[in-house]
Image 1: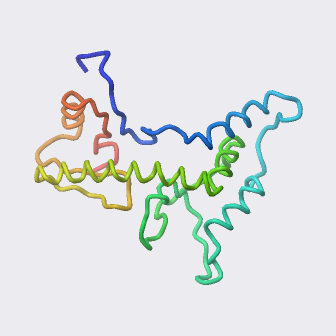
Image 2: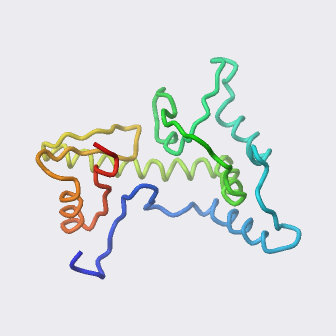
Length: 185
């Protein structure tokens, strides 16, 4: 990058462009502050997660479990983006040691009506941005993989190396992408 003061937009894996909603951040901050007191200090949370959070998850997402008779447990970080009847995740994972207590405090407020609405507002923003990118890349005649159910895209640039495309997009648009080579062949 030739301009060290340039404002960059990061689309890297795990990065976000939107802040935590006002309803969620203070709850997490208050929980973190409570860890500095003798009464609030704790190590790991319950192995299976906070019971109140588990109950809220069940009531929010699994009310119809009797109807279809199964529960799929998955990573589901991107499940909120799916807007049709597709399975919520096909991602396999090998292990999970549990979410931090601070994250679980944030998760609990996310499941309140106001928290849920704020999460969906952010999700809508990400999906709108993905649609803008999809439309722009498609208008250039490029093959774009992704749809309305995901906040990310894969774009095929024929006869180009992904690292070269990464550099070109960064230098011309100030957008940090993830080279396709990071996902394998």
